[in-house]
Length: 189
Image 1 (cartoon, helix red, strand yellow):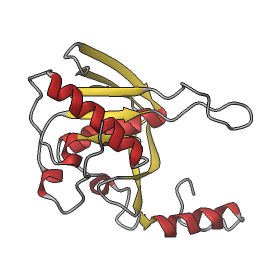
Image 2 (image 1 turned 90 degrees about the vertical axis):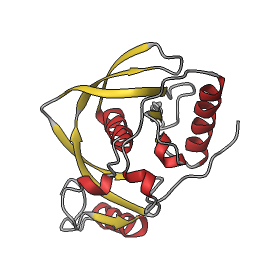
Image 3 (image 1 turned 120 degrees about the horizontal axis):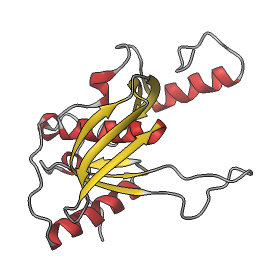
Image 4 (image 1 turned 180 degrees about the vertical axis):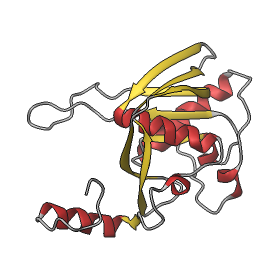
């Protein structure tokens, strides 16, 4: 496996609709393994093919780990999803706000409202049909990555134009909130 270069804005491919994957061959399997390695190396929760410069309907997602009572990661609790040619076929009525970042927009985070739960129809890495129902943070990651396949970035979905911060600004806002300054413009206020 090897890591791949991640494309950042303003690269045009990040704004283009992708094409369906039709060949589930050895090259695709290698690409998927390299995407997983790249996502992990970059500390990402997901990675879509356009982010590595490829116009295909393909994304990899790794769920956050479960933690024990002491807050330590439970080994083996992360789940990898490979979604090929995905389509959101159902959404919950409930929407939730959350802060997102993107490997293709380094150094920034923004507040985005997403569906709390979704159902996705896709294919797995071998072309087998796949149906998934995901919720909470995992649903957010799925929606973020599927957006990439349609040329949409999280900055297009900000709850308000001013709800984007550098990572440093956001950390300061969170620190202010933890210290009791309730009037900071932070998610959840």
